[in-house]
Image (cartoon, rainbow, N blue to C red; front, side, top):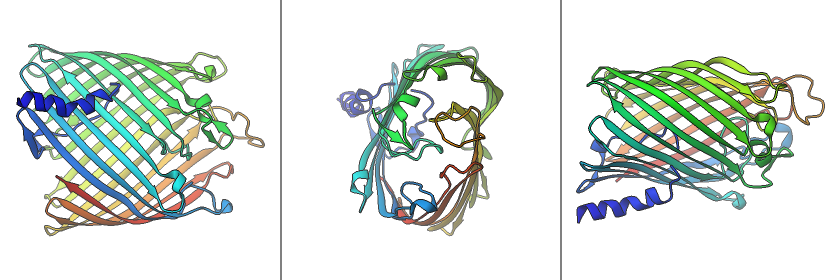
Amino acid sequence: MSKAIALTALVWLLGVVAPARAQNVGDPNNARVHVGPLALSPTIRLTNFGRDSNIYNDSKDNSPRGDLTATVSPVVEAWLRSPRVRVNGRGQFDFFYFKELSNLRALDTDTFARVELPLNRLTPYVEGNLANTRHRQNLEIDAIAKRRNDGVQVGTDVRLTAKASVRLYTGRSHIEYQPNSLYRETDLARSLNHTGSFEGLGFRYAATPLTTFAMNVEQGRDRFEFSSERNSDSFRVTPSVEFKPLALISGRAAVGFRRLRFREGDVPEFKGVVALVDLQYAFRGRTQFSIGASRDLEYSYIYSNYVLAGFNSSVTQRLGDAWDVRGTGGRYRLTFRQGPQGIAGARALPSETFLHFGLDVGYYIGRTRTGFSVQHYGRESDVSLGRGYERLRIGSSLTYVF
């Protein structure tokens, strides 16, 4: 009976998922709800409840429009553990509320699931996600446009020794904007709709109970539905190190090499360092430092592509058992690599810099955290295309873990 309840509870996670890449679900040992082999961790968050001074990221010359906003996000993580199958999944719904700009109200969904079959030394798996959203997906595009991201990855882990394992995998991904999603007179669907396919080989070695070294080699292909000049083939090699939460430093750091060649000769290839870092350090149990950094090539909606590089960081200080204070900051730079398509008067490729800093004060009551924050965002462009802006968010948040 308990297994039937468990499987029923996971249907909504698996039924709506078109399985994708590299998402994480938390630790089932921290889940507060257990029903037989099923563990659940529900959370509900209220964020951005306050004033946003610049909803559309408009420049000062365009009279930025502000509004009262709020985002409500129910989230549930689930794990099913049995001798023959392991399943984990995550589902999140984001309801975006705008008081005056009611046409921007929307419900975004993001779901993920993974199924494993432990077979002695072999563990075949399938995983993936499906996201439907209207809100911004990167630092370049300010449009509030509906899009769908989905994908699937299938592979197997092979345990070589007690500490070493190999992973073989293949998969696909897909990004699709709604037709006629216009941003600055450009149809995002015609520029960015594409399908990717990939296959790879990974090696992992657990040097200590808290530290794992890994190496991943992957090749892939991106094919665009309407913009064949963006079609490309890529190859990357990425060494990485992972630290478990109990280590002094926790998280993951990966720095490697990527080569991406466009199939049409007039677009220059990319060869260079790529990185993805997400690390945390706890000092005496009261202070936590976090650093995130990335560098990679991204597709542009109007230029061919750009290199995105930058970092974000935070410091959180606990004040007694009930209060904490968190300071955040970050800087990212977009360096465009291909000439503009249809931008009148643009004589040079621009680089754009994004800056963010903020302060958040929180108070805990049991499993509930209430917070008040001030966040500032800004963008500067080397070539004036009317894309520079400043944005201030002042608001509160509420997080409740069931």
